[in-house]
Length: 275
Length: 308
Image (cartoon, rainbow over the protein chains, first blue to last red):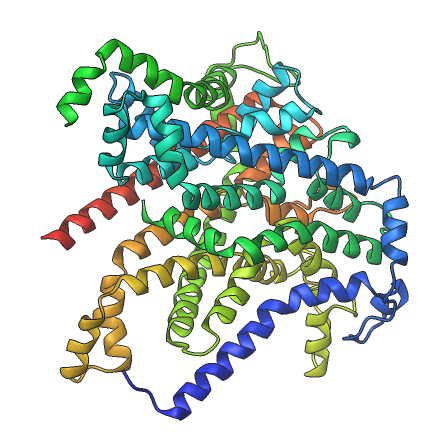
């Protein structure tokens, strides 16, 4: 289809304006992080920062109320362990559900699909009750283990494996390989794309999670960076430049993942809408 | 060949291997989803203030209390109002963005990334930018600067005296989510066969009519998925409400969607009433499951139509 140059120009004008609008909050975040308290409180809006230095950053890491370094470490441990374990657990389960016919297969599949419809956030109270009974409040175990079993990721892997060419696996099995060896030698090496897709979605979700870490990280030593920032924001006489420079640091890991693994993220999002 | 593999592996063997693969996941699902929900059903029939092993049975007392509690009923109203705004607005905006980006020949990847990038931001950080800079009620907020430039008064966006907080919450969620749904629509658009458009062009269809009679019908299944995801997403709203509205003095009495209500009743408020929280969870779970089932039914009916 052909369009007139005027229409195409208009389309690019609209696209460019929208792109500026969408990127604006990121710029405001940086501007605030590198401005002085005085500039931020001025009545008229200033586009340019006035304190481009590492002063606020240094003050933030020295601030014992926020414990930025500790909360970043907690977030990193949670996100990395959750990502690796979720991919592993879900890939195994997805393969089992797609390929191994067993009496219990339908039951587990049914329970998985049922879980898909009721998101974990809705049942946060039951999960909180169980975890506090186990004595896992304010612990890394409590932050990580309950969120490792993703019905969404398992279902995604199952759908993927249903479409995986059976011939490859059958050839391996004829050579005497069992389910286990076939899975690791033949199936997994051809599954990097979907593993990366599930991995990037899990990582970003885990790093940005708020409600569960808020419930579990009650002790200051077990706050993730999101909880730490949220509580910093609501403390008396908060130092705005510190708060914003902290947010800039907290957003950096996910931005890097986004920039370098966007292809897989897009794949993951596309798959999440189809089934 | 598959009969050969079937003979090689006995049925017994298969059951064992099934559990080796699925066991960890199934066990986790049981322990962290199903057992908790069953326990919650049990707790919901007890007076369980500050305890997880209550002794005082109250029957349907918690349920009746909730259904008569104006705060709970209004939390469902808040959800409904939020959904009425956010679902259609996000739907239209993400579809419009997808159509725009899909037609861009130059720098398509850049525009797609620019709109998709906010999905990587957390609600906590977005709320922080929105409430402290963009929609700050003080004079220095960007929105108030813009209003003053047009000769208008400053607006106290989050004070609760007006409905300004809806502007803040909806624009925040829109910014953060619209890219996600744009990606879904882009994938849907790219699945539409080119010759459908060519045939339409030969028939002289242009612009709005192409959208109405070709693009939208072809996006039916994507649309159904988007609407379902948007509804369930709105139901789960917690992070942006909490982080946008909570103050040093606590959460304000207005704009409490269901999850915020439950959080304040059972964990974050003065009394930790797990019985009431559990009853609320069961009610919400039933509502979400019902919405999901209705949508699934409509969706599969639509699917059958498409195949016929």
